[in-house]
Image 1: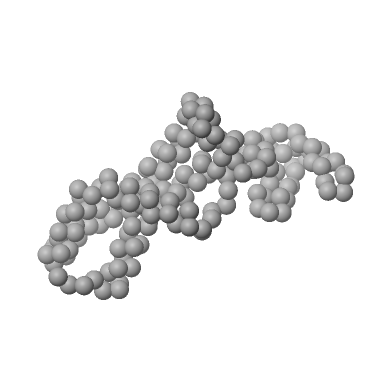
Image 2 (image 1 turned 30 degrees about the vertical axis):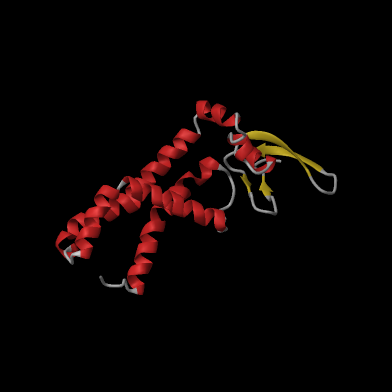
Length: 171
């Protein structure tokens, strides 16, 4: 048995991460309105979702692995290309869109509210929640005590980052 090269090891790691990363990028907005983090929890989630997606297609991946180990992978270029397209791109994208749609359903949100994981509970702050509600009249209390009112609609913009900037379309 040959020991894999460094390039092969990197390729395996990338192949494992791609589906989980795509899945999480697609579902991130539906799960919680927080900036993408790169801590250990995110890394673990990428590995977990990537592994689950690969597990669903293991029956197909096993054929590719057998061809690779017997030096026959070059004879199956079309199958490998289709596998890459389906397993590394289309499946995570489709599962991510389906997961986003499911988690946004009212019935699912009510079920999740019983364990403290509903939409409002997943939202990190009132600011994040309020800026996603759509067109509204708003009243903003500034640190110096000034109160500003205006229209927050499609032409308005609010930054969810630390500064909490806001642009109102009409004051």
